[in-house]
Length: 276
Image (cartoon, rainbow, N blue to C red):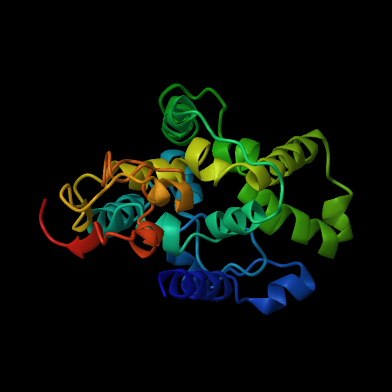
């Protein structure tokens, strides 16, 4: 029942996080009090239906304004979530992660992603979310943009850029090379997601990079019995991020989705809340 339960939670998260229907109809963005709340997964602030804020977008806003009064709020929320469940948000809540899993069901030839590429998301996190905004504050270099959102994020293009462009002629008239670049990234991620498991989550997502840091120390733990596990490889074959859980039960890439528990014929994989 893990698969059915998780998919229902993913769908519910998507609908609840983007339930401002008026925004889609009128091409507007919700700016009410709920926008002060961070949605746990990667969900664009500018999506017409979004009720909350994106953690990555909010972090960049903080980095670009050292006087921002909620500067500790975003960090505290991410630390709290990470400490409790680690990267389970990626496996259960994130709409863009769910979108990639659906794309992978398209019957195309499948390919793997080299583990080395999974390190890129940490570089993106450091450079686009922390370093460049810090340089703007420290040296007044004029680099005052939310770099990841503006230059890379395909979720923003899918959830905000395209819907707003469809709904509003004034926005369509201003589209240029930057939108073309972002659209190319989105198309690339979509095509790659049909062939590889969650490529954006594993290679590019800075939010996934943040949550992954807590996998080793979070209260929610994965555990593999060394006496029961026969290393048949079924867990890796069903894993949405191609993680070998019996080698590293609480590795950085594990999104705690529970599919390995469901498929394990020897009942070697367990999850629980407890100390480490």
